[in-house]
Image (cartoon, rainbow, N blue to C red; front, side):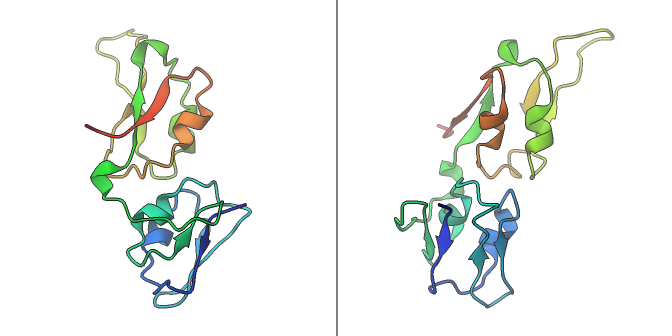
Length: 139
């Protein structure tokens, strides 16, 4: 079951703007809806909703969480093969592959290149075949 939006929604559009898979539809100042076929249960919509109008997949009301407390991907460079799967799946374009430090350098890896763009959805962690990415709340 996917996340859902209650009638407390005021149509501000913050959830729609941040959803990493474009699962939220709705017009400004109108009740928004989550497409349960697209929703990946990442919780971004619940963390950003000022109206506390979002319920998780278990029917629990989500509370707003300050952005500085959202988990971000932490990449272990020695474990990363630079396959780019995380870069490709990131709908917010927050990840990239590091630049070689010298010509012929093969020690490249994924990096969080745009921390402000990252919404902490965890898709990168889920898709990494090597387990090189973990989601952690910054300290």
